[in-house]
Image (cartoon, rainbow, N blue to C red; front, side, top):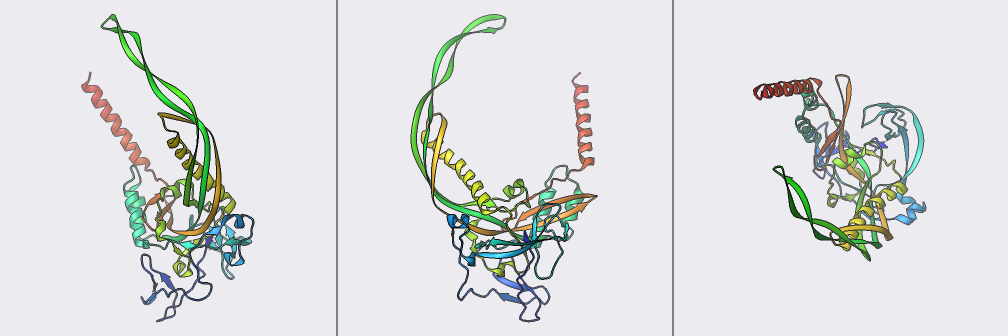
Length: 365
């Protein structure tokens, strides 16, 4: 659910709306160029970066101050949920540029606790996208030129869950140790049979049991369905040491997407990721040359979570009748998107390969 910017900060010089300046702690006026520092957070209720109790949230018992209401519409093309503010009843999806007009009601959601502010400007994100497109084999050269030609990108804060947990796991499995036996085999060499000796590897298995423990910190789960997993995975890693307590100042001039993967589903996905890490710990603890895991029983304790926002630049282009969607990590500049192909370049490469094969065959006759 993409939240249209509802946080307006008037310019002290001309009264126009300010926007957050990526990579800085300032608000900038695009109308007159005036710059204002973000004021320090003070007063009762000032946001702080903190973990929330997972059990309380799953029981829907979070304090009212941790919740907020959103009025949303659904994108008919990519299923993103977009928030509308005030009397607005129409908007444009920031992921695919599809108009959305159908009001689907109000949703009560958990507030963000933290935000990683944008570091890259729109110009820097567009340059990163142009470089990425330029490195793609068999991509239409026109797509890269089109992206560089000042096409607008949208800065959007994407929703994520982070999960912390203490774990203790008991396991049963088997440790495999290699041993070798020598055997005699008959081989054919230059038309004659010869006997040779060779080493044959076997595995000796032994039942084992033990315990491992691990503390998980900030297991990151994408909390929306607007982008496919290959997109969000390609944007990693994120530097969460830059995470700041949520303040609406950071959203000035940008959009923010609300979560559509709820906390319970996000927790399930996080535990699945934790299970992969625990299995690796168990294999190391078993030791030997190979390992078999029969069972792992894990106890989870001190489970907490955060709802955070991470910066993403998005672009949706139509080029020669086809739609292309791209995303850029607004912190690091990593890029992912729809892979464009040039039929002409592919055909030329195939033709060139056939010519080269024919030349090689001719001279090898």
